[in-house]
Length: 336
Image 1: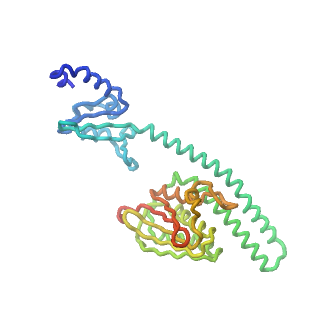
Image 2: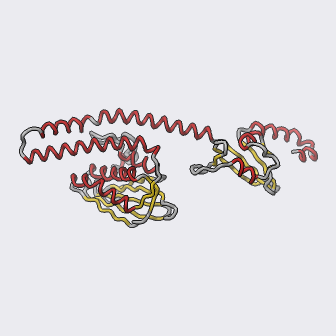
Image 3: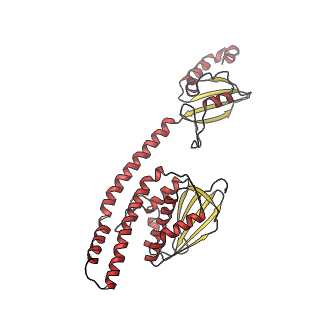
């Protein structure tokens, strides 16, 4: 600024206005010369990065003031715990760079609080829904259990026993969905899993429900050694939800195809059921949406929450015959 003021006196008012503007900006502004030294910095930048800042080498400032974290993403953490976003552009007409530092700490904190409040609201709705929906299978289970205490023909006894088990499984499914939905936002994704182990666990978890519906699940594992970081319990429960939904819709032949193509592991479940009605396509994964007389409507919502907690996605489509649910998860770097 001094150079501009010395040679161009008429520019002094504009220069002073620019200095004043920079001093009150809510973002940090740092100017580097062509050799990477800080020549100018406003008060916000000094407050974020600390002193000394002026006449310091930018690389030294980065080493002193920044402390990157694993979850930084497009932002970067400072040693004081704040999270900032950097925008860098070259100076116009001379060597050097202009760095704009936006403090996103409060924005991220507000987003976290809002997400927490939304989750509490969802949990409240879920508890109310569960209290209502749990009555039907519980009442039925108690009725069938009472009938079993009487002298009945073997065939009738077996039929009531099967119905009792089915109602108890409904209760178990609803409770599992509630717990998974409640915990998915805080899901610990820390175990190294391979596709073969995941397929084996899913086979065991779905054996009983498949037998009950006289259905089959054909697992075609084309990536047996592919690995992901994840929670086996959460992923198997999510895939089990997809199988359960397909069976509830009337499917009897299910195929799970597992494949890997960098950077994703893909688990695609196809069935021979009626598919997803077009008018319900964008509603079925919403929490508490259900077309059934019983159930919490959390099945697909749980699957989506688990996928997102693992850095993945859930895609829904109708195939040639029936629904096609595709869960994609990020491969470990060794596989990507």
